[in-house]
Length: 103
Image 1 (cartoon, rainbow, N blue to C red):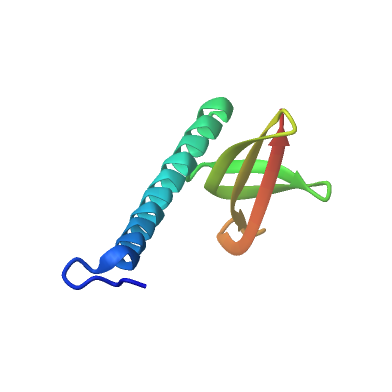
Image 2 (tube, rainbow, N blue to C red):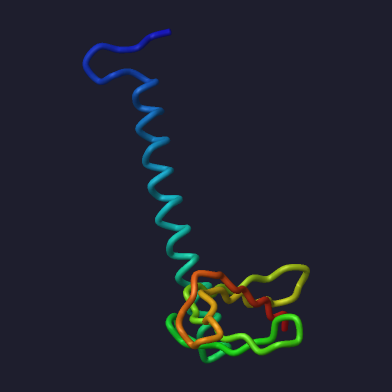
């Protein structure tokens, strides 16, 4: 195997290309996540930080939205909303709550 002397050789070049691809993929993933969040927000009229009232085991539950996303699976559009659940005394709690809405 030729490693080269001054330029680092083909293995070094391949490693650099791999690092660049990783950086590009991370940037694309962040852009896609932001786009999914924007789609969800526009479709449902919600934003990060909003309080959402939903139902869990037949009882109303309030949650503060921390994440939202939109997905297409089996030809159906789904919205996933998650956040921290409010306690019974009205304070924001530690428990996470999640809602899946399929259109």
